[in-house]
Image (cartoon, rainbow, N blue to C red; front, side):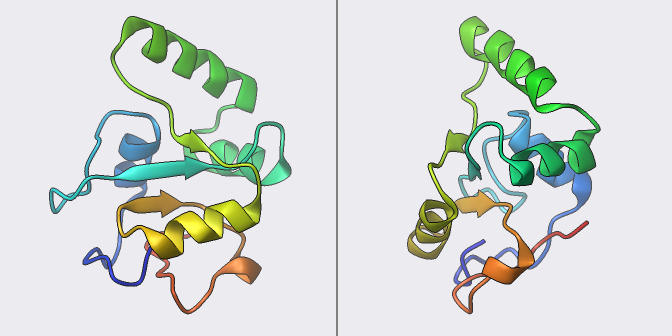
Length: 113
């Protein structure tokens, strides 16, 4: 998360609620813009396995149902780790999972497994 965001930490349930489309804002009411890694990457697969114990294909099916029913939009899918970093550092509303070695001083870790 961007260092300038007021959020200091999120629970696992809050991260799940944002990434699974249940909430579109952070607990403080600010809009939340979750960002995903590209499909079929190890980082994305590991994230969803640890977060909700689901495979990436199950997550894609879940989002297809929500999207086509009009209930929610899936997280923005970035093309690279560099794009994820750019989005986080430029927008205080962006929430992203990122390998620890890519965290910069412009970011704040609000949840870790």
